[in-house]
Image 1: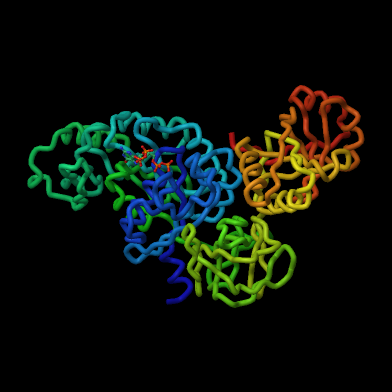
Image 2 (image 1 turned 90 degrees about the horizontal axis):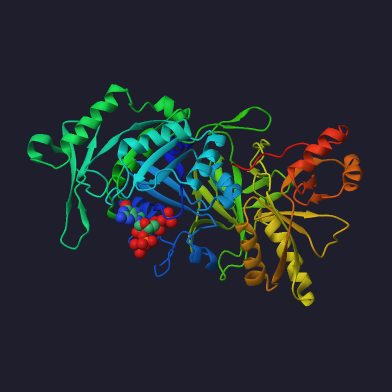
Length: 524
Ligand code: G4P
């Protein structure tokens, strides 16, 4: 098969949701449906189960979030699905953004009883910023919840996204009888409950006349008629331009509605396409190999204490062993160790195509946003650094561990776990950490202690707002009380931190010659 044919059958996507909406359950159901994993529970990161994709860190397990990201690959129909794991918490918006920069579509998962939750909204904003098409899956319909029409209203009014239901539930939430696929209105998909309480899914549509009486069917048909009245039909172009979202209903825990969702991903989500480059051009899929580093993670597995760069293939064919060029340093990189990361399990990848994810081991100097390429130089637009809103000075608790501490901070900085700021005034012993959300600090402390044996102590700093500035302005700013200027080690940018907005407004007004530029805002 040619590169174009291989690319055309790839679907690379991520699931965004509020914690507890059922992301792990849905991931598991999707993979099970495609028979990627044999043991139910294998993808689940929660305690007591064998975690496969996302439980590297103890802290993640305790909190039920996944900070580290991995990709799960499975085949479904003729397609190759790449499902990327996103952190389940908005404090990690920056990581989420990076993951979302490596996918072509997102599945927004909602809990039927809760609708759009705070974190879903934030994560959705990241999708919008990335112009990703979004498919909506309303989960837990087997439990009492909101009315389906109410959920649609919420999507429309709060996200400004037109919901176009593809399936419609029969029975209110909590009394789930089946689904109508609106494309085949004279058929129903019914579920049968087995004595153990589980639901045996016969996801094959039955003709209505054979189905007999189903409670809730006439109400469902009335609602479907209402939808037809407002012409809420799925339209692939509107969906791909981020104007509408196809909506599916189901119960991931019983595997209900999952096949229809998978079908939708294959049938309507975009396959990999030519990626825009920094110089304003495009890298065609059949051009020589290029890949985007979207995530760097060290020490994921105590058995393999190394640094892995996750690369999304953007063009050409990846072949293990070939020598690539690293955009940021211009140095060559031999891809001797290339893996598919299936949680703790690593399998060697010999070849990968656009849309696929490869984990490159020993990726010493790589950072998120870097490019790897063959032949013609290519760089993709950089990843924005979000405006931090939380600041803390960190120092090592035990001075005897200073070396490990320094190494740890450097490593976490390189991975982009947190932004590291420095100044002569504070010296090298106590850098300032800047974060979009405070949970990033917890990750830093946890990893300093467990991976680098250098427990750190944090002192929260009272700054709230940050602006980019320059060396000339620095002197003037530092004369004012409540303002501190530090250098971000990642890119050498000078950042001015302000204790409050009032001070920022004051400086902007009274010192017009001082340079103060906003950073990319954290997603509100
Ligand atoms: P997350 O990754 O988004 O945090 O959510 P997760 O899949 O862990 O699911 C959170 C809880 O919701 C789990 O229950 C899970 O079983 C349940 N759940 C997921 N999908 C459905 C569904 O379609 N219907 C119903 N009724 N429940 C669902 P838990 O009590 O936290 O754990 P468990 O011991 O039941 O697995």
